[in-house]
Image (cartoon, rainbow, N blue to C red; front, side, top):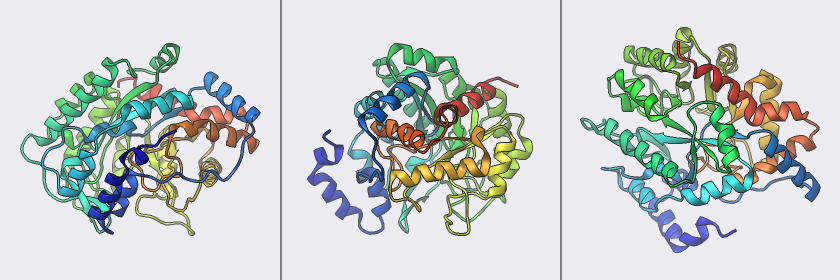
Length: 385
């Protein structure tokens, strides 16, 4: 398969030079190197994995297939302007989903993309939103996601049964999502508008420091947790039937939400802090257990933080199962916007299944991890309160 990196060729090299050392993490999100697998499967094992995927839906709880979110962003700092100028590649990403046997994935907008920049090697907000900017950019992103549906590339998922419908049509299901609830811009009525638009997952907080929702785990706290509006927005999302994702929220903000929760909440792309592995994007065992106790799940995240190959990602899945139980773990790849991913292409989905089965994980457990647990929570959170 010819990769996008090869197609871009000299453009990627030039961009790497332009971004410099400080922009290296962003460059690696744009052009992740092919990660080592670390194990081998026979042709028979691969064929069995594909057959398993045909019978058991694989669902990615957090992803940006083809980077649709970069379209139509205005007033970007120059590094992100270069990033957006390289364009999107939805057709390739969706073709990879089909080849890899993916049933559905989150197609996530990024509410705060226009106000981000690379700071000390990592993404952070660098300015407030202009008046009306957050809502206008949300609307543009939803319009672009709808174009993928209208083109026939994907099937829009509004309820759990739609994933089976998408499989019957031979196309991936697209679960509209938004990373960061900043698009609400202080207007709670927009929660129901978003639901009417088809949004079914919202990552409550992304990278904005001091935003209207609450504190992000990668910046100094401003609100000491959720803001007053953030609490109202969280309750309104649960009432509307939107799955709320607490990835990126500080522990205090996450626990503030959990105290209010009437439906399960989730964390779609993180890992649990351990004595041997610590990172600002990881969460405590106590928070992970509280999310599980709400009825939610923690998704195994294949970022290259303590991971060097796909085999180690399978170790991480097993670690989460050991800590939280097989009913409480799902998949969240952050596809096409992840940092140094060890799973950078949906064509590798059969390797995930085949690798877990090769480790003697039961078929019942594998089915839960790759999609069953997501479907259970999706069914519960889509019921309005």
